[in-house]
Image 1 (tube, rainbow, N blue to C red):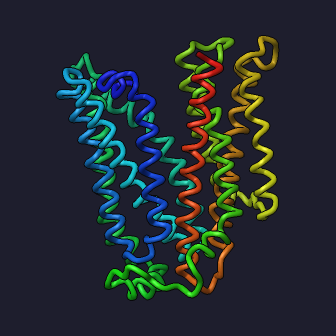
Image 2 (image 1 turned 90 degrees about the horizontal axis):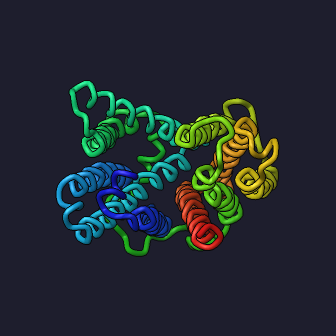
Length: 364
């Protein structure tokens, strides 16, 4: 992101999140009402191609003309990151919709996979830097970005044959193929036993939980950790380690069902709302200058609890979501999966907006 801000201008730091969030939410909302009219395969293929290609186009714009023509570069950067967000919506919502049609274990492993992806980003970035340094490249800021996005493109392209030859051949997919048999031809008014708005309404209680969970998380993370004055570590090192601490414990939290940490629907709601205590705790760690709030060890403990609880609550919300509708109606479960995916990303958007408002008022 720092490289893209250098290429497209300071305002891109704000607009990149806004464009991405708006487009991914628009894509997911579209799938809630239209997703069950299309087969899964084309959605996965278009989503993967869209994500990979849009990333490379962002990198090409940044490394070629953006620094000389900021207006054109900024516009292209916003358009392509919006395209990336929409393509991501096709991919992510389809994953949760497909998982809702089979077993809750699939939803668990999607959540774990998203957590592991967060863990991989920093090591892969360091690997790109090491490769360029080994090749004798000294000014590696922009080449590293291109190499990083190039690897991301290859990873997205690899999903296409993986879905075609691994996922589609799995026994779980037999029931999905039966449902998809009705999707040979697009129908503008596809009928369900119940109106889709009723299905959405039944999913709202658990969708609210996952929305609130991520709204709480992104109201204070990651921006507040960069407002903290470290007690012993260097500022840059502290920020990197705190961010990585979040990714590690968030991923561990997503393993909760496999570790026999089980939350009922009611407990999930209470646990989600209880996480609001982390908002004042983070601000206390920023502003109080006495122990333990100004000590790095205490802040890492708070971050571990914050991230672990985020992973646990989010995973159980996503598992419980499709169970809110008629379990004998697979298309209702699929729609419930789309609603949950939309609520998750919408929570990230609202949390980020709240964080931006706080930054632009109290901290300016």
